[in-house]
Picture 1 (cartoon, rainbow, N blue to C red):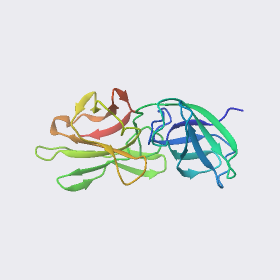
Picture 2: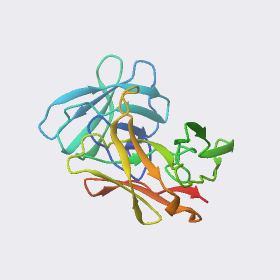
Picture 3: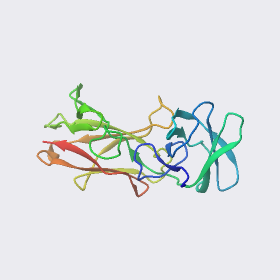
Picture 4: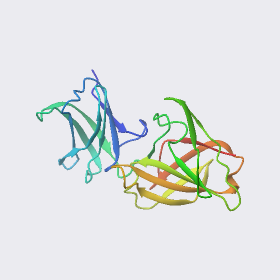
Amino acid sequence: GAGPRAVSAASADRGLAPNGIGTLYGSGFAPDGLRIAVVDTAGIERAGTVFYAGASQVNFLVPDGTAVGPARVRVLRGDGSEAQSTAVQVNAVAPAVFTATASGRGVPAAIAVQGGAAVEVFRCSGPLLCVARPLEPRDGRPVYLSLFVTGLRWYRSGVRVTFAGEDVPVEFAGAQSQFAGLDQVNVRLERTLRARGEEDLVVIADGVASNVVRVLVQ
């Protein structure tokens, strides 16, 4: 049968980048003692930190220093022998936004602050039932929205964020610092965006677009 597939942990339609969080989807993983190694295009093998290992899914950190280009992700047994492997492409940046349903679609798993107080970005009534909550920027009271992303931190030329096709001011973009592989992008939503409704939001790093998420501004 087909071997495992390695994609961004935030959105299965995005790829891998150094220091990004990846997910292997497959079957027959033996979680006990399982290890991950990434062999880059230069032939250098590095261990990838395993965050979660189940029989059909493994979440791991793409090792820092992995060269951009074709690579191989190896699933190793406790004794170091290879159980499975898959070919992947490692990109310099591969921005992907974490979502409330963990599907890569819908409302982002974001936090927001307005006037010094936290405001709700989403509400969930079940694992896959999450809806966007209205954000209401006002004069002198913009909403500061923090998005959690992976695959973004090594950008060179810059990070843009668009909402409803318009650029919004980016206040910060880089490593989140508390969790390995997690990046954060903070944007400012101004009163000029009011009444747009639920629209697409996209993070663009070095011209590479993330998965499309949905935010409600009223």
